[in-house]
Length: 112
Picture 1 (tube, rainbow, N blue to C red):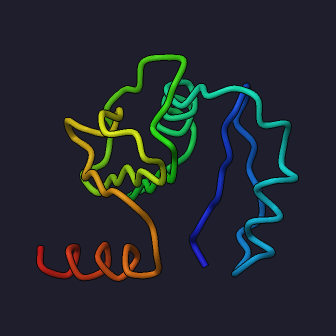
Picture 2 (cartoon, one colour):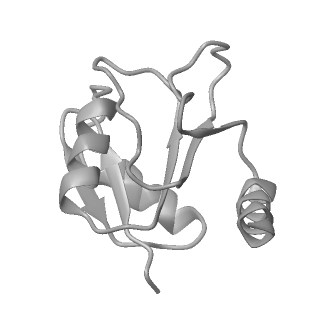
């Protein structure tokens, strides 16, 4: 109920959270996908969107510098094959994506 979903490209766009393939469709239709300004997107979220967790699903390519998250629960999920991505430092870095990633996040936060 508290989930907010944003896409980034040349700009940041909020999309309604959806389950399954309708979620994929909402992301695809949210804006033209031609840029990779992940740093600007993280900066905007850090400054304008109250949050206690940040999950970024990305190919870890960015045209700009990606800053650290302002929350401790921050995950950079790399869905590409690039070995040296941007999600390090204060990010919890995860390579690949499946439903198991969400279970991993849930379990790791319950350990704390």
